[in-house]
Length: 121
View 1 (tube, rainbow, N blue to C red):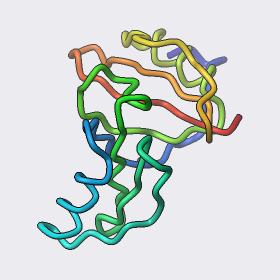
View 2 (cartoon, rainbow, N blue to C red):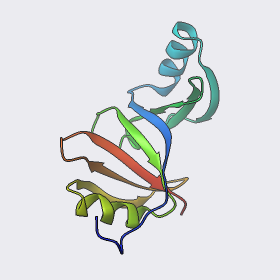
View 3 (cartoon, rainbow, N blue to C red):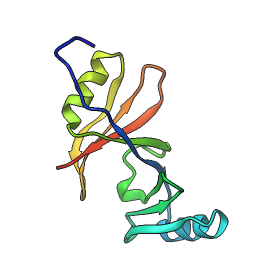
């Protein structure tokens, strides 16, 4: 990374798990692991409290990773974070797009691990 490219520290916002049926997945995780529901957005998305980390259940319309579970990092500037990522040897899998609640992009680290970068609209 060069001296002119700076981003603020990021936060692990959630761990994204694509699921076919959000309601069934909420019931499964609530029953099996006793995770409390934080937020449900119909059949698109649900957020569960996993003890300090959010388990994000993404239905088919919100599956931006192509079915791959992924850590999601919250940043203040998605474009700047992606520029730093590419400069550091990572790659952009899916360019930034506006979702219903944030701007998000899908990236890979130099070792092929998929993750999501998201931030305010």
